Length: 350
Image (cartoon, rainbow, N blue to C red; front, side):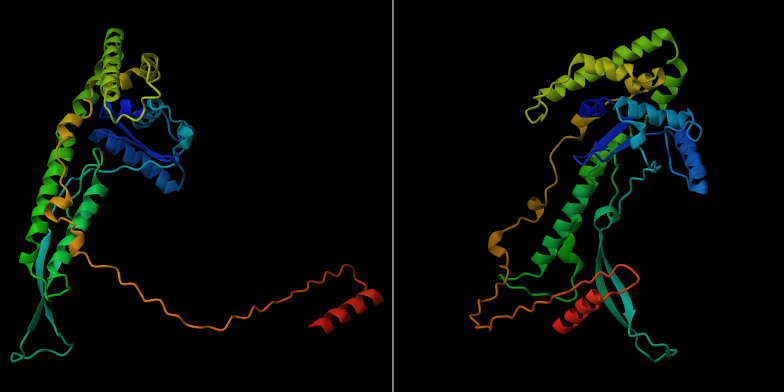
């Protein structure tokens, strides 16, 4: 059900796991983002936890209402929310991921003279993961991109330092040896940033949010927005259930469940979700950039893990040392003759 509700619009996004931990991501316009930061600064100044059930601290202001409506849409109780974090999306990338650095070595604290010859050393610096490029969290793929970059760089290093099934480390490494890694990162950036992140960035929600506040309170407009949202939910449900890899064929989603999802949220939330465009899943689909296409993994060129030969050594059997601990509990202020005899017996056993 959450998959259908998420794919049908681009205002709310739910990520959850089997451990019942999850995140409700919400796209905000600039005014809503500024209000949220101002509200959270009050909690940070007083060092107070966020409790959405406390309307004195979290009133029905626009931004808190947006959060509560998202929770109601996915049937998440506000009591499970313990943290709200504003995140500013900044999709950036490094134009060069391999750079040859040159730095001076052999510096001393003494003031160098004009006859001293400067010595330099070169080294390669590589970028991978978020240091190489940042993706939009809505389509995600941040961890996938980071793992692909790490695998590609590792295989490029192995290929550079391998010659005729033997390791031959050449110092220093050359920039020209990593042109394939530079090309791989260019293709990966084009696939993830331009093919996925850009699809969300070029589709802002400002217009749909502003329009929802203007007409959602009108009865005729509310009926129109409700019909449009339910129609979107049904279309997404039918399209997902036709997929061969859809894992929820055993629990089909009924029309009543979709109508209830629309009826349990406020009119302006219905208008926002009906006006927001659905996920551009078709535009994001396409051929993936695979590490194996640039750096194929050939087992014939892989080095075996060294195995130590079994040694037949005769060892003397180890001796088990047993320790006995005696605990004596003495109650009362006065000691009688029986307790004195018991203490002496224990001392003799030591």
